[in-house]
Image (cartoon, rainbow, N blue to C red; front, top):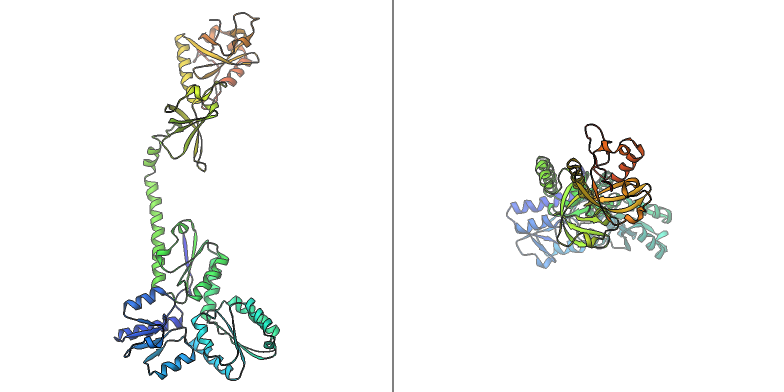
Length: 498
């Protein structure tokens, strides 16, 4: 499997700056509080907590002699003023790009411009931006919601409007929104405040996802930019997964993938990305090892399988179920063995219940394996015919008598089953007198002697008879029956007239 990692994956400038501020304070031995989680990455937040960092929900939670760190997402202006009024020792870790948006909306608010903010109004960054708006403002998460706002507030078309975007807003949605605004608003001031790193990350992820059959997005499940990356990748690659750590890797999907793409949100530390990649590499190596071990042990596995499925396709099966049309057997494998009635006996009039009983052990030949349905088609008739053939040949050599039951009347003679072998007997050799009705032979047992082929000129000289002989003797595994030759002077020819 080929793994491609997006060049832009991982921490952005603003998040990295916030992390460094906290780490420097910890290294100095300071007691540190953050106003809310410093970033949207639970693993990094947990790591800081283990080092003594406390999360304050309100300013009143901050202890004296501690340093308060303002999160990368920023805070409302009123909250910052309160921090100053309380004389708290603090460090502002607000992303500089977010701080820029604060200044923009603050300036236009003083001009009484209407502020439009593209973003999720419940996100901490957007709440911080709203906190700097001192005039009318509206937020919209997508272009559809923007159209609704413009329809409900027709005065926006004539007023001076300032539009900004959350730094991690979807680039495609931003472009759609601007097209709408440019058509409807006559006094519009546009500020492209989407972080450049976000634009690059989203664009790169979209291309990578379209080239991959598996896409991994690493980051916090509550991270806005990570979720946007997931949505973008999912639209291009159905097998897209959002994971926070290596422990959430979809191992079954990894085994099927040929090209895997990896990207990460702006709050995802390099250490987590590295851990995911190492785990993926180990999984691939483990699969390769299994393949190599499989190749090395192929001979052993083959020999094991041949204990049941030997080289001539034979298997032993125990009868477990009997129906009017088939017999089911246990062959010691996961597949269910099935012996159809016509493969149970050469006698077309036989009944399954008369031929076998539950618990019987049968010698069978594998006809077909269906792995999807989990079944094996088996034949007892073929095995019986093979055994019967050997017995008939021996009887021929010993000039012995064999018996058989006539099962069919055909043109020119009858078909009898002897030792599981279907035998054609010409009419001239089937009855005692020429005018006897051969239909009377049906289901009757007949004794036959095995003559030397040289004593039967008809068998030796008649091509028509040999064709019939082939037709009625043919069965799987004995597809070609050679004519009698000097090297094989004796052949099967059951005859009523011994």
